[in-house]
Length: 408
Ligand code: GLA
Figure 1 (cartoon, rainbow, N blue to C red):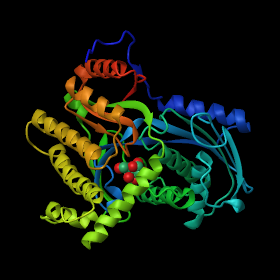
Figure 2: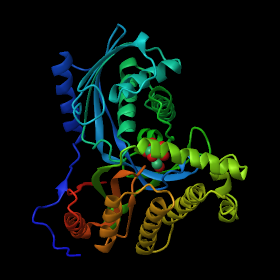
Figure 3: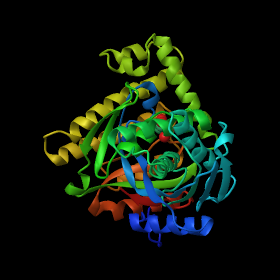
């Protein structure tokens, strides 16, 4: 394969500063509704470092947040009306840039982005909070459908907006858990997409410059914080948005979560996590006769173990370089498991991962649900240009549209 770098420079998606995001949301609000919002809030995307497709098996994930955020300008209304506009109306599923609803007409449904907005209001009302109408203006620099939890960024930003507009005072640690659970219900119950708790709990509870270990054996998940000090050691997490999205990925996700439940039932355990905690976990998984269910279970059980090992390296006392090399190796093994055992990769993701590592990344993996979207590579800052050049060249060789890059 020839790998001469293409002429053009890499395509970067820069994050907006908080000021820029707020200005955009305010301008959109004034255009759509006239006057000023009561508050402008935001929420980031979710980036898995290691631990995908473990949350719905009561497993473990190590995750962080993106610098790219979704902004919402909000004003409380005294009537029942819910009005929302989004600047991404042509990029996300739904009726376009505008939606109007009413508090007394909220019915679980999946109409795209407006159902996430409505679902959050519905979930907060279900949880007993006094709700009123809202005007909301939404703008985002987080690329949608890229495996970075853009739905959770939207629901969490709307939840923060509602919290501010209604004066619920949930901008506390406990309040973040409460809002994360409401957003999970908005997605699972109102929209009806059966996902785990990873996205909303990371988005609502992880701070800048930290990674969170989430333990989904408890509900709500127990969270442990770790400083994410990669930049202090000259390393960055480079996101490679392949732009690809597999048709029917929601069905594929649903099938895998059913396979995980089936594996647990076959082995007579409450969840695969219960198995992962036992020393003979892999031997027991081998007893699953169905080869697909066996491989799905093997991914989940070994992924939980990789999360434990990654956390041990992140919090470890050994030489930094050795620990980062080991974390990179764990990321790569995670990718191979997601590809071969879990069937969650795509050719574009595999190329992005392989090319990054060939060009010097310490490790790389698909980031999130998979089936398209982003890969994440752990890269020395000095090698970012070499990695983007190699990935661009490889994509060019296969006539795949060039990916876009984001830094964490
Ligand atoms: C999606 C889901 C999460 C999680 C990840 C895979 O982002 O929303 O609950 O299952 O996929 O780790």
